[in-house]
Length: 328
Ligand SMILES: [Mn+2]
Image 1 (tube, rainbow, N blue to C red):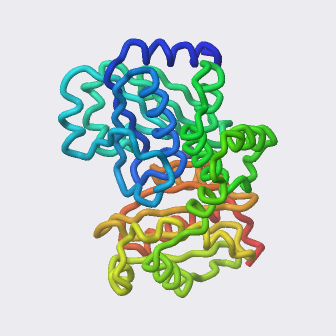
Image 2 (tube, rainbow, N blue to C red):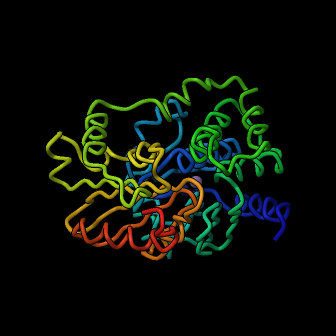
């Protein structure tokens, strides 16, 4: 389908629905939350009944409009009784919707909008564009195409996604077009300083302490990969949980000597979450895929079985397949 046909198909899908469940991916980030909020606001405007399911903490995103109905695990189960349409945003695989995945079979019709390269066409309609920097970028184009008003509130949500997934308009994926979109969103009067500070320059005290431990434990592997790992007891030692280390890999990626940054953390006994960033050469999405994960060329992740040290060695070996050994 062409872009125009997809946009038309989306409105036709919405027209057939009354109740719509929106879900992003687990451990929601700026793009998936921004996409859910922007879409939720438009559905409300159309007189629909949108409900958003987030699996994970979203309290950090306090600048986003708070007037949308939000489901928790319990109300999600109730909401899936009866007819509803399901919209998945920024979600490459059905299990990445978390608990909402359980409802998948109950959904009569679903529409997915996503930009991940490893998207598994799992919905009734799959609008995927891996050339887009963010799901919010696709939504911006959809809003424009279908004449949905981009209010200040919608703009706050879309700007959050655009800036989050481009690392604050810095990633190599950036194009002049994204700056033009950001400028259009900025025209609505949104508080860009508040959004950028909230996204990139705000940390809780515990998170800051955790970062200290992560940096303390970091080492440079073969002069090319900066690595750090946190076990549950490391988090406990500073009164934190693994949730307090979400942004750590981005800080590791600032190390000038390293082409790749790898951060491993224990989510549960023998369950290790791996986040990776690369600068120029390594396709970390390919590394993540080798372990059943996914993401983007410069930022990707996977979940592997523990213990942490052998898991780390497996990841490093996989990355080294893409790096010349002579840098030793
Ligand atoms: Mn995204």
